[in-house]
Image (tube, rainbow, N blue to C red; front, side, top):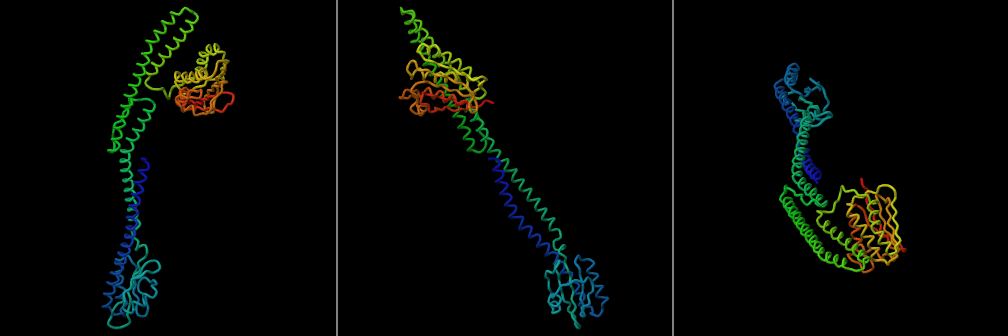
Amino acid sequence: MRRRLIILAGSIAAMVVVAFLVPLAFLVRDLASDRALSTAERNTQIVAQNLSLVPSSDVARIEAVLATVAARSDEQMSVVLGDNTVLGVDFQVGELEMSARLGESITASVPGGAAVVVPVVQAAGTPIVVRSFVPRELLTQNVWSIVLLLGVVGGVLILIAIGVADRLSRSLVDPVRDLSDAAARVSLGDLTVRVNPAGPAEVVEVGAAFNRLVERIGFLLSSERESVADLAHRLRTPLTALRLDVEALGDREAAARLQDDVDELERTVDFVIEQARRPVREGGGVITDLGIVAQERVTFWGPLAEDQGRRWELSVEPGPHPVAVNATDLAAAIDALIGNVFDHTPDGTGFAVLVARGKAGARLVVIDEGPGFTDDSVVERGASTRQSTGLGLDIARSTVEAGGGTLTLPADPGGAQVTLEFAAVD
């Protein structure tokens, strides 16, 4: 925006300067020409008036008068006698001389400049003519210097206009850039950022509204975290009662199995509390190895899969598989995808988890041998009625998108397949 404002101001200033200076340059040229011709006409008239008192036969006196005036003149002067004898500098003026003999003073352009021809009125004898030739150099004397000076003045005016536009645009663009930077930091989870409202009144108003918005977002998030944490804490009371009931069971094998389930449920509650108290989802700068996390989570689910008679497979391509996602979020996404297999396929249905290099970065694929998805709209639903969980897929989708990637559901008649393509990590 700043560059465009400067270009706009410079263009307008240039057009104004050109609109004024071009006519002014022509006016200077005309004034210089008129000045030179006026001087030539005056000098020619002086010679003609002096010669009106000198007989045309007195050549010596005519030459003396001509030499006196020509000595202090810049133009070339001559006198043509009645017998066409030329005294002084000879030059051709064409038919102007014949017209002047008829008693008419003439000023006209001739090749190489301009000529002034004045007849000399005498009592008797053939009329004589006084001529002055003004070269083109004299007609345009100092014109180019003045035009150059005008050009310099015009350039300075344009530079001043650009400088003023730069200062004005800076006062407008800098506050907007600060707002943009602050918004980017808020998008990364920094709710402590504030801007100093500055610039035009409208931008100041936007800056103040931005500060109020960030404060409101921080308040709402804090309230939401406290509410979720409070709800999770309330679950501890029934969990304690459930643990006591399990310990009172007579069947020790069943009690041990239920005790493990209660422990897992308690860990889940602790995890919910921890997640609720996290300021924001970690973003840029967090690097996690997808292969390591996938191996940990599949190993965790392995015993349950064996109890249900599910054949499972984990394939991790050699080499690191870095992704820009927090390890906790990544584990939650993998748990959601594997949990879908356990929740929505019958016992004995096998599954596989594959980690490999993708199109740009790392790739995670979860495949099961169940009936598969009827369509890919389950990602957009919080809860699906078609033996799938849109919520679990949405967790996976939001996680992979946080890492700059995408979630896809490739068509596979042999079962459900979910592919997470993570962006490359620099």
